[in-house]
Length: 164
Image (cartoon, rainbow, N blue to C red; front, side):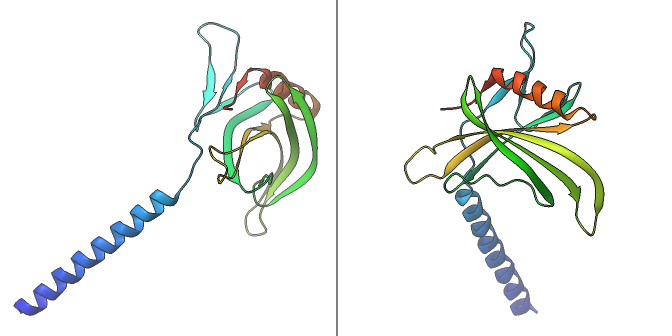
C-alpha cells in the first residue's frame, strides 16, 4: 500500500513539474508587441481614448484596436472572410493600408454578412530579427452607409497614436 502511494505521489509530482515547464516555455516563447497604441475618440477634455482590448460603438462603426506580428509585410485578416479590396491611404501617421472585407461566418455556423474595414500601419520589430508589427483599427460597419463609415474611420485615424 505504501509503495503504491509513493508511486502515485511521485508520478503526480513529475506531471506537475513537466506541465509547469511546458506552460513556462509557452509563455516565454509568446512574443506580443511590447509597445501599445491608442486612438483618441474626441477633442473634448479630458480626452477619451480607445486602447487595449476595449471596443467602442460610434454612429456608423464599432471600433477595436489590434496588432499582429508576422514575417515580411503580410497582414492576416480573420478566417471566413472575403477580401473586397486593399488600397494605400496617406494619413498624418504615415502611409497606411485600408482593407475592406466581409465576414459571413462558417459553413457550420453561418452568420449574416458584416462589412469590416481595417486601417493598418506596419512598423519594424524592435530588432532586425523581429517580424514586422502591423497595428490596425478594426471598424465593423453598423449601418448601410459604408462610404460614411469609411470616411468616419479615416477622420478618427488622424488622432491615432502608433509606436515608432
